[in-house]
Structure formats: C-alpha cells, structure tokens
Image (tube, rainbow, N blue to C red; front, side):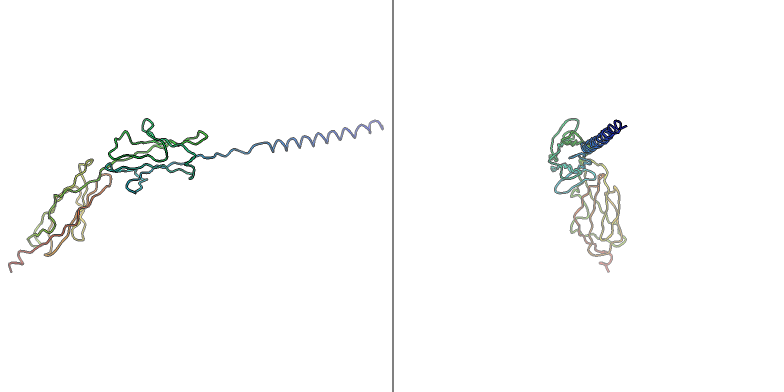
Length: 233
C-alpha cells in the first residue's frame, strides 16, 4: 500500500503540470492571434466637380466652351490625397492627378468622363460622370424700342416690342419680358404688342434662358410715351 501511495503523488503533479502548460499554451496562442486588419488609406467615396471662373458646379458639371475649366476630385475620408493615385479616362487615359484642366474650346473626346482612384493596397474606386459643355445665349442689338426712343399714342395704342437672341446649341429659347415692374413670360416669342402705357417714362428689358438654364439679360432700355390725343387738347 505504501508503494501505491508513494507513486500517486507524482502522477497528480504531472496532471496538474500538464494542465498548467495547456492553459499557458492557450493563453499564449490567444496573445499571438493578430487583430483583425483595418484598411488604411482606403477611399470610400469620390466626387468630381468643375471649377470655371471661380464658380464650382458639382451638380451638373456644366462648363462654357469659351474659357478653360478644371475638374477636381474630392475624396472621403479626407486627407488621403497624397497617398492615392488619380487617373482620368475617356476610352483611354487622358491624365493623372487630383485635378484635370480642360482648355477653352476643347474637343469632346479630350474631356474625361471617368476617374479611377487607387490606394497603395491595390484597392480602387471608379466614378463615371458627364461634363456638359454649353454656350449661353446672347442678345443681339436688334431690339425695339431703342434706348431713349419716344413712342406716340394713347393708352389704347398697341406698341411693338421686339428683341432677338442667339444660341449655338438651341434653336428655340425661352424669354421673359420685364416692362416697368411687371414680368411677362412670353415663351419663344420675340415680338409682342402691348397697350395700356401711360404717358411718361418707361423701362423694359428681356431675359433669355436656354435648355441648360444658362441666361442672358438685355440692358435696361428707357423710353418715353407721349399721348398725342392729350397734346392736341
């Protein structure tokens, strides 16, 4: 019996030792497991907008052809620009960098419609967009009455008001006539007859808008109405 007792104690010690070693091994293994890698310098969102003559247009990306413009890419999260590669495409690569300059009267195939942003890990974000190049309408000097004109008649006399604007993209334009303090939406009309004008000084001008909502405004024209019937009394 003493023989058995003397050999049980070491066996229990070995079991406890193995348990301690196993626990230590598991703890060590847990400590060695790396944390879940967090992506760094990864772009989640890219926005492209146009700058021309100091105006930013991020909604429609519309520019006028007669002056140069710059496309700019903004990213989120911010502050990563120096760690990213920017590439501007239209079928093929047109340029690199966070900005792209469009010269005046640029050809359509020289204006990008896609940007690809890549980080150092090989991740990339691609954004398609469309730049609208539109010439605004412009008034000619063919309008009536002219500055300082005198019109003769009574309040029942219909006076002629006419004007003309041109636009390289739109055959039909939309006009608003401003006569004294009243605005008349006249649509595509370029000539109207208006009565009810009292004797004295009056002003008029016309505002034109094209299909891309670009506008031009005629200078204010001051003219005079003399009632010939009153003059004869």
